[in-house]
Image 1 (cartoon, protein in one colour):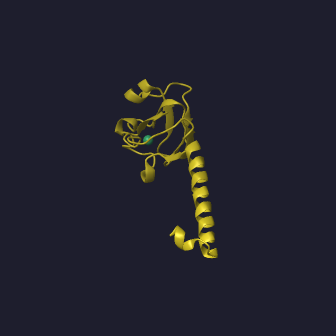
Image 2 (cartoon, helix red, strand yellow):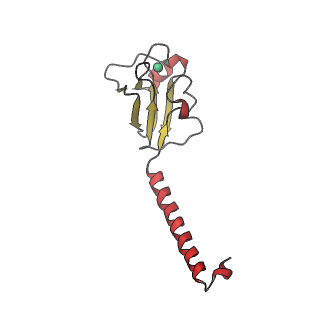
Image 3 (cartoon, rainbow, N blue to C red):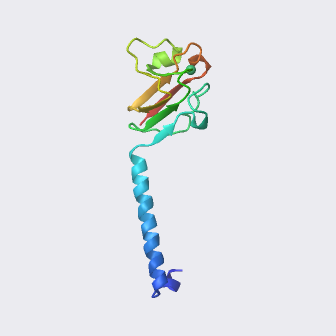
Length: 132
Ligand code: CU1
């Protein structure tokens, strides 16, 4: 392939294009590596049985979780490990998100979120996301 193109104008152009495409790939990869954006629950959004969604995914501090849901039916509350485990009523002053399209930046360590509507957390509307 390289031998065929050598010396011809067409071969030179192909090499330039390939070089540019490679450069673009490297640049895109670099920007992705800085911080990733995850849609919680993928297409289903933030809903029941989302607790298994983080399984097998790799998160880093600074990555962004996007919670999409019907704001009249649900919310998102950042809770402690104990609050997550027990599906406890969030403590006063807990960070509550309720726009229906919330973006939350992950802190290093494990980040816990539940829906505070009674019964929802117990139905799996909870996630624990560990950011490296
Ligand atoms: Cu809910």
